[in-house]
Image (cartoon, rainbow, N blue to C red; front, top):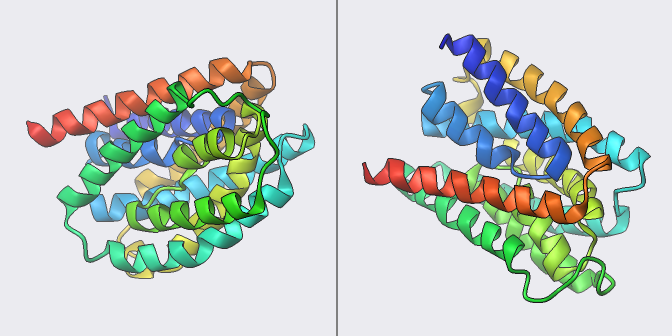
Length: 248
């Protein structure tokens, strides 16, 4: 299959995930860039942040229009995560590729299991606590900076399981956090941004933006439980693929 078509298809799937689920875009973008398009891991993590940031910023107003963004909780999350995202981005360039790949797989699998088995917490079971939002946001910001992903794959489980937000609100609020964390992490990656192949990244990003629009429409007419299960299945599939690829 021509590389351009692969870039368009992969980008559309990334955008669909972000628009519908509020996360998972980076976890899909980076493996797609590496394994489908042949982009080196260091450049792929930077490119993934570009794609995820632009897509999240595009999808955020669509969710906000439908009342699915908890601005106060999201801003607490984002503000706590920005300093640690900056620190994580500075450290990322010094880590071997194997460690980054392993980190992707382990964290994706853990997040998926947390979504499937939330420990008895039901969506909306308790009001969000500012201290929980700040602590969770700081930890997820560090992961965003190190792994080069928007962090939505962990923001959504944290917003639902730790803070008790309904799945639909968590999906929309996650986009606010992703936008802030991704932009902060990108600020520390200027040394790798010059090596990006925009002949691949431009169509990939354009397809992701279109996919995000369709994904936001899908989220409006799909139940939170279904979105949770889809999200978990996608994360488990990505984690399994990366573990197998690393062992072969």
